[in-house]
Length: 505
Image (cartoon, rainbow, N blue to C red; front, side):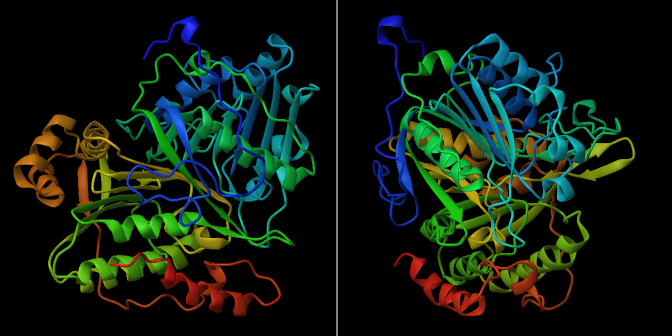
């Protein structure tokens, strides 16, 4: 879409800086502020970005176009990574931008425990780096969260007019191509050794939707640092949008959902969980899910209800093979296995397929690390964000998710094309072949079975005999709420309230 200078668009100022639930309703009413979203605001241009290689190159182009404000709110941050092959290190890029553009301010807020838990180097986050020594650059560690909680949002807001949200962290090991070659040098860590292949998705939005994400970013900055930041107004949307980033949707409302834990006197927010639950239960033909974890109590309840119905949607889940961290293996990995057993038992009508993706290497198959947090319902609604399908993303960690609904047939076609493109990547096929197989078979599962015959493909998630109930201690190691006075009482109240979030059928 090309705009002349006379048709220059500027971002609209958000209605206010409060946590009130405002904005346009979605096209068909599934996504609604006050029920499963904080706000729903129009995005002039929206793009779905698959995998870190494309995200980082578009992000660098967008950062270079910033003139007033760059805000990075993240789980982890590595100033030594390069966003493009021939680009500078991230820290040097940001320093160069503030020196080149007077009035540009850069703020980076990262989860404090990233220094211990995340892959980035410890010393730059704890003690700073030379690139940070500029009055227009501020890097802070976010300690304003309950015990054992993680700040897990991945948000970049540029001039309050362009924003990126999803699952991709600005750290090492994330810059992977759709080919996911086991020896991909762009994915190399500080030691020069490539990290495991990783698949992820992100979303870019502009206009009022980006301005609303600026509200979330400034609000988080205020909570973490005590500093109130001014709004940015009057930015030129067309000047900010990366020229090589293809537009997926235009002028559609984007629903913004948060998980925000109870913190001191601050009330919690549970919109992400409500959004996911409503999307699952609204499915009639098919659900396509990509997930790092599959261990949330409410997700198991919702999917079992769908599978037990005589008629209902096909459910295709592309899942991470197994968590890498020992505690995650013992809790979320084992709970994932038990949840798969429970879902298989509930699948009375053969509508469930759970896979993990593999890529071929010289030494055999390599499991692809699925880091995406994506749900597509009936080619009608797509959701991308940071919230995992585990318990702690319900009300302990800080999350941000975006979703949009199709308002026209062309939007549904584009959502279907995103799904087909993702499946094509996992199957080593062409998107057109996936679309044709889905059209001919009328089934996602049968289409996958028809095309799943290459060295790269989807493997059935391994299922071994064993229990289907949650691991003892889950409420402590993968909790649904912060540990605080009255925690057990609040946890019980949360579980009693949760069924009410299910839409009437």
